[in-house]
Image 1: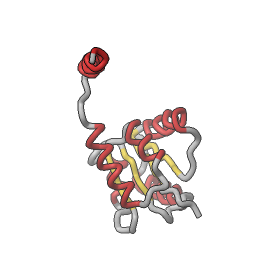
Image 2 (image 1 turned 90 degrees about the vertical axis):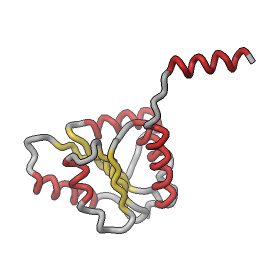
Image 3 (image 1 turned 45 degrees about the horizontal axis):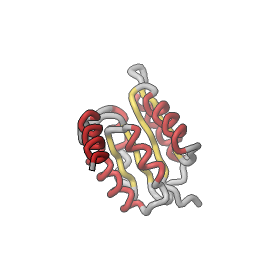
Image 4 (image 1 turned 45 degrees about the vertical axis):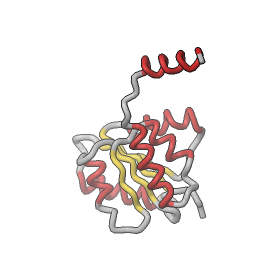
Length: 143
């Protein structure tokens, strides 16, 4: 039994695969995750079947988190059909900082992970001007 929350990354094209590959460069090899890439030529019923098969290969006893690319897109819509089950969270707006937060904290209780993701989204959506950050750092160095 894995205490680690299972993770399903879903995107249009190969974005989800590339995101996990990039994250693994930073945090190391990961387990208990799957990716699903969706293309315009894909048949929705085949995608649903593939998604079910991939979920079945995961240890979801501690929960399952879907990270999808965009709100209202096919990946999110496919994942949303599974919200009838317990300890499933579907999030849209997959990005590398969020993915890293999730990967480094997958052993948290499911409710704490939900809170962490909400905070990560709030922090990640803030626009940061690097010039302003550098200026603040320079001013701090003068003190």
